Length: 140
Image (cartoon, rainbow, N blue to C red; front, side, top):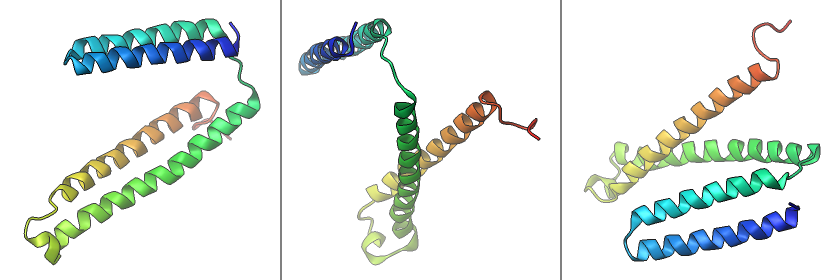
């Protein structure tokens, strides 16, 4: 299967899954929505395995650099946002003293946990790929 055929097939499957899920949510049948999403994912996986999409070294390099830059921007932004949302509620500023804006504390905690989760995933995957590609303690 050629790349253009795969793209058309992916568009048709995605449109069909979107229609099934929207109808299922409208009729409040969430089991049907979940089944539609899982079926669509399975069909897309089968279509992709038959597509034989080729990637060259340039595309892999672009993907690696994009992922690295995304992490370098997203992690600090999320961490700083969590700090800025948590700090006013703990400091006792007048606007936060009366119990207003309590949701900012919750959002700050969620952002803090997401930041820690992101950093942990990065550390684990870095360690895994470092060992897989010859890094580790046995280097001289």
